Length: 212
Length: 212
DNA sequence: CATGGCCTGGACTCTATGTCCAGGCTGGAC
DNA sequence: GTCCAGCCTGGACATAGAGTCCAGGCCATG
Image 1 (cartoon, each protein chain N blue to C red):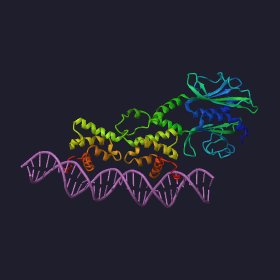
Image 2: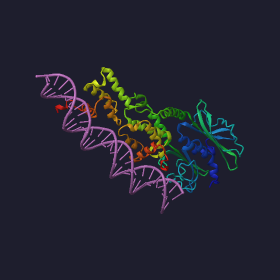
Image 3: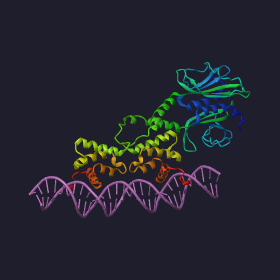
Image 4: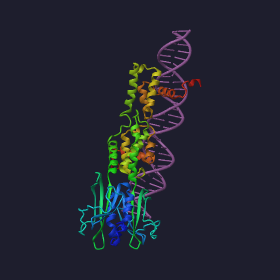
């Protein structure tokens, strides 16, 4: 499949775009005739060359239809949203030769945008109350900055991530506050039981205590 | 120039990439034979089709040279820095047919990154004292300053005095902290029962509740 | 398909919180 | 001195919240 002359022709451009956009974009080269993937660079899903293209909505036969689609929103397999564009490339006779799609993962950008807008007037307007005006806000803040730091939404945090967040909250003495546990559990999208489990692990002097 | 068959062929892809990257990227299609610009999408400089390409450093004649360059840093006319990639597209005979360049203006991203790192690092580095280093210290402090204010030792405070102190502590959300009540009671030299009595009186919507 | 790790809801125990009451103390009125 | 009213106190009690434990479910791995 790699020796398809179209792939040879288009590979440099696709590869270049994929390289420019780093890990956040995939470039897919489709064959509109067989409706299958010819090649893919920097894949974000598990699709591979030979898989179905699922380009149904693109009308590749009508020469009067537009050749460029998007940017439009697409949903990736794992729920992330992407901005995507598609271009139909035609040969001399006006027949669709290949379709090039670029899918740009928008979540990192959205997270960055969230940070930028979050740090607006409120940060300046806060006159620093005696105790925290609302400690649960602070919990949200700690969780939020961690999420932004590692670039994953709360629901996709790993166990280790949650441990790290809990370490920060613990250090901030959050659990010295009444009724804090349910709030933290909710913020971490975790059950109360799990919270206590993680805390126990965190506070265990010897992590390998099962080898006692 | 626009009717060059190569331009017709490549236009969709170039246009799509330019559309995806919004106002921050330009896409340039070069003719390696004449070393001139064939077409340009979303130009960030004042270059136009027909202008010199200035691709001197790219070796388009050696078929064994790589076809993809970059991302490398380029300086735009107005001093902004850009990340750029170039791809050499060859025809069936291995001769360079066109060169595609994508120039992504990095300054908006760098500014955003600056904001992010400026606000991110400190927030992470500081353990965030959330509550007072030790909240019980704060209790002592509140009681202490009141005592100094009215010039009487703790043991000789009147009922009204204790109420006033409690009002301050309450406002400081001290009682939102776990195990705070015994500490406050001790600080006020008062029994736990009395503490609760005073607090009830303080929180009573109608201070003359005995006149119910 | 089996397995192990993790998460979960729920039951349970224990500690802290808050309420109540029967005294005892104090300070002023008589 | 006696009486009284109001306050404080220790402790009994009820309840809510904190923390533990377990059986079962989910999911990814092998």
